[in-house]
Image 1 (cartoon, rainbow, N blue to C red):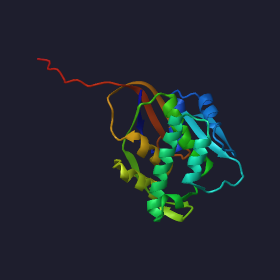
Image 2: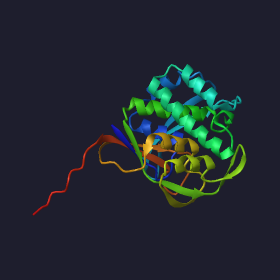
Image 3: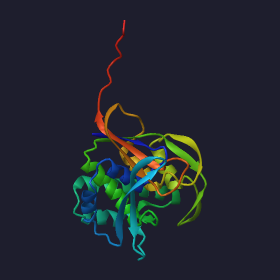
Image 4: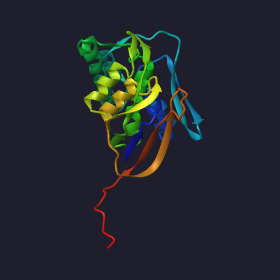
Length: 247
C-alpha cells in the first residue's frame, strides 16, 4: 500500500488525520491508540464535512482550558517511550519531533536540548504527530508521496511574535528535503510546521505510478475560495512498462 497526498490547499496535522480517517482509518482504532499516551486535557472531534460540493472528514483536537506546559524534545521523547504504542509508532513519532526540534534549534540559534516547544509542544501537536504515525502503520502504508506545496505569504502571531509566512520552521523543514513549492495568491498559513515535519520525515515529493483504491478528503478550519482540504489517494504501486508501438 502506498499513499499520495494532493496538497493543493496545503497540509496540517489535523488535515492529514482527517484525510486518513476519510480514506478508511478506523476512528475507534485511532482513539484507542492515542489513549495510550500519558496525556490529558484534550478530546477528539471527528465530523463529516463538505465544501464546494466535496464531502470529507474534519478532525480536531479540542483542548481543555487548563494550561499546558512548554515541553522539550527530551520530555516529549520520554512521554512517547512511556506510551504503550508499537515500536514503529513510537520511533516514527520521535523522528518527526526530532526533525521539528532540529529545525527550531537552527532558527533560534540554540541546541536541540534547549528548544522548548510552545505551540509545537501543545497537546494537539503531540496528538497529530503520534496520530500520523498510527495512521501510517494501521493502513499499512509502505511509502508516502506528496505533491508540490502552495507558497503563500502574510504574517502570523506566534510565541516569539509576529512572524512571516510560511513559518520559519516550515521553510527550514522543507528546504532540507528540497520540497517543491508553487506560488499561491492566498494569504495566511496553509502549510503548518506539523504538516511540514510529517512530510519532511515520511514523504517523497513525486507522483507515483499507482492503482488507486481509496480516496480521502481531510478538511482544514479555514474557509477558502476552493475546498480547503488535503486529498489522499491510497492504492498499490505498479511498474510502468515501455510503451508498445501500434504499428
